[in-house]
Image (tube, rainbow over all chains, first blue to last red; front, side):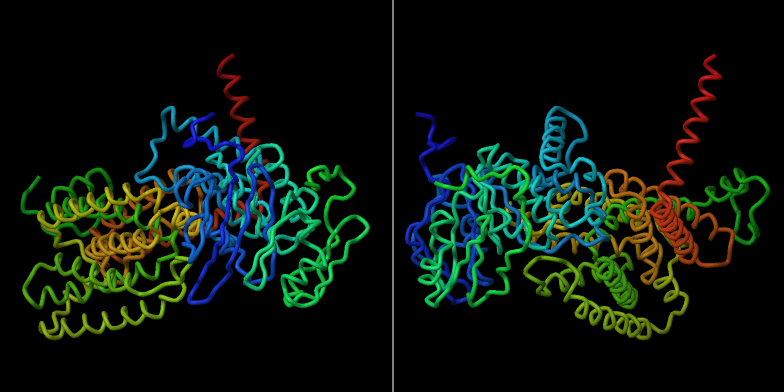
Length: 292
Length: 317
């Protein structure tokens, strides 16, 4: 059996909530949450605006303490293993005036929290630079990483930020709305990139999303947050008329299109749940990961 | 060289610039002016580069303006003006640090009204202290628009020590400060003390503004604090190169301005600001042109490279 401190057994869930609850500003965000995210899976966190999706992410990061219940990240209390988690916060874009290169933003992910200024030479420096190049190439950002980050497109910025989150070789990747401010072609491309990372690297990926469809074919599971409650399971189990109607407490209808897209209709915050006519149905599909 | 050289005998520069330089540096007050200007230019470049990146130029200006009532009060009370500059700027930095800001930790947005209020009140206080002292008109011009005549040995030492301390602190805070500036949310998630860093930087900025004020005057601090750094950021987004360029620009501006001011009746602040402005215009123009005609420049570049290869081949053969 491997050393439990450095590497918990594969059977330990990456994230486990037991009867967990969160309060923010005197308001209960969610409560009675029981769920487990297995290691190496690709899981989406879905739900209407303001339902507490980001709160879930912040609890896992250890930024926001639970008001009740129990939470473990790789068998440890949250907030302990700094290098284990790569985090991409929900954000606006960098504006055009930001005079910092993409490669510098990626590099900050590796040593930005260390005091002092880095030595421009030495073995550690070369190893770090090699790792920076490696993750930039992994996300396909090599051609624009040397340009100021404010001057590249939203999709390109998002790729660089994903590289930043990946640089410490985390075991868990928390992505808060990475597709939000992107146009449709970029949504598809970045979604494909994230799905590829989760399938090839074995990293556990939790992605907060408004729309499940760009990533649906690669998902192992979904966590649906609404009305202060949370349900989890496979997309086929959770995104159904019965489950969502029970969760919301009002009639919700889920339509399944011919190519397997799920469209949620009639929820209180329906505007945020459009299923666009995008995706990669004609190219190779990742459907094999879908049924669990 | 006669020891009793006075300003009156130096009506203008002669035909030989080396002689002019020797003549200028034979005067102790000019040597001190160059020493102080050099210290201040290097410090202002490093702190200013970070300030421009953080978009806190308005705060920097306010901290400098507040050094004016500090110095005026010091003169009125009969203490050293240097102490007054630092007291005013650092006190203002701490007051501004207390202003609550947006949860994202982004500098700028809502604090500007408070900062403007502090700035206006500080200027008014400065005017009051000057009038309490007895309307010392030469003094007020120096405080507001700069003077290089009266830099004492002690003042150079103080400027040097404070600059070393601030530069050392900037080095120690370097990486996390930049991380917090560019990417506050992720930095906070990584455990970087974003709020504390912002307060620390304000105090360092206050010290720097006080130092620069003593050369350029409280109102023209931007000439050294913003212009070289902003010009450098127009030209490059690389951190090391950018800092180096900002320092080079700052030193050029200070040295050229002191030399011109020595042979001219016009104030040194005017020259510092004019040279800084010219540099910024040049840098912005270069960036504009480079963005407009990247193909033309690349072609010209290739032509030059091909030509020098040809020349190199010819020399080699």
